[in-house]
Image 1 (cartoon, rainbow over the protein chains, first blue to last red):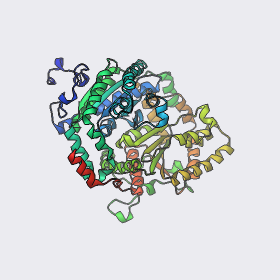
Image 2 (cartoon, helix red, strand yellow; image 1 turned 30 degrees about the vertical axis):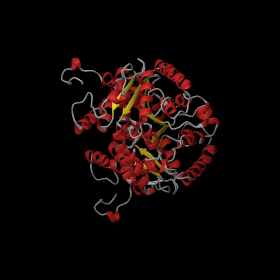
Image 3 (cartoon, each protein chain N blue to C red; image 1 turned 90 degrees about the vertical axis):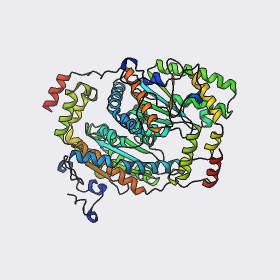
Image 4 (spheres, helix red, strand yellow; image 1 turned 120 degrees about the vertical axis):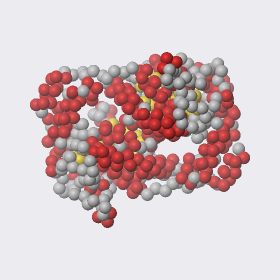
Length: 288
Length: 288
């Protein structure tokens, strides 16, 4: 359990708290209702999220300013998780705190034949955030080692090579100035049943439901195993994986916000200096 | 002046209040500090904007759901205005109220040689919102009749033809299910001086300033005239122009939010019905 925040010397960052241990990753042993790093309940958690808004605002604007003045830094947030794990809710509540001018969201469904023909990373490369931007992937290249493995869309050999390809790709991304923040939203099988049930009970949510959701649900254990493999094999120092307990929506939103803030802070970006003569411009403006 | 909200029978919509009269459009006669449609001050205005969030939430989700289930409706918000008129602030505060999953923002700078070669509407067509989305243009095809006219980048003949091309293009857009909401953020010349001054005083804002801003400022009257021509010539029933007094930032944010809400409401979208057997799926879920 995390130490109380009252002892800063022992406080671990959210990234340290939520980062996977690739040698001992067992998803079923992780409590999906836990709230590591936070002692309060729902209303405290929501208040804590709101309280992060000014920090997010400033950090994101620094990144945006950096991109507008020739910098190369950018952030890619990769969101993965089973159906109903809350990828959409995280975008609404956490990504929604950011300035939309600096955000680009891309959802990845099953690849088209064209995309398939060009290799699984092609469409990913097309969708990377521009300098100064925060890119968010709603599913990602990880589906090519998750769904592809569970539904046997690719052979074990091909999938094996993809882990290495992903690690090389992400290393190159980080090298080029893109911080890669990978987050699995982890819900329990029981919680998924609850959430799918809500979608079926409420006519306003019918559009969110697809009968194929149950087909994936029937493969729950296979998916969990595929996640364990993917998160272990593609956990690197440059681009580590994090597992966020996601049965409690407010905690999920708060934890992802903290992970984003930690990453933006780590970039340690200054406001770009003027590339013009400030005094001269002031004089010209006065005269205008 | 608008009637008090206490007399609903006489209440005009925000679109009616802010829509231009193409036969008598004189921007210099419009008070940029006015707050048509709203009687309160800054803190009331900010509270009124927050109070719109639930309506925006629901209306936008209906549009998004519509797009996800095969519908064609979408909304394009075109933001135009002089430098510092608050296009960025409107995106942060008003567009920022929306679910970022359903929003796509595109900023248009000077066209590249490639873009120029393909005709001025080509890059615009590339950037149109997908079904279910709210697209926001930070500047737009109107620059091709504004900056192009003032800076003499095109001949008067060419610009004359562009008004007609824009009207035909927008009519086609509307026909295809895209609601086109055109808004000019209208500030005074004095307010611009104030805002440019802030950018020069505050080192955290230096990156937002460019010496070329003063070149455009020197052409203020020419720009205002170009705006009057463009807004008159391209004001149609299908895609009318609105002028939002924008010296007061809180009013600008609130007015644009109301214009968006009015448009989304006018779409009158229901929640999509289930395209599966709900009872059968419930039974399958229970057994899963």
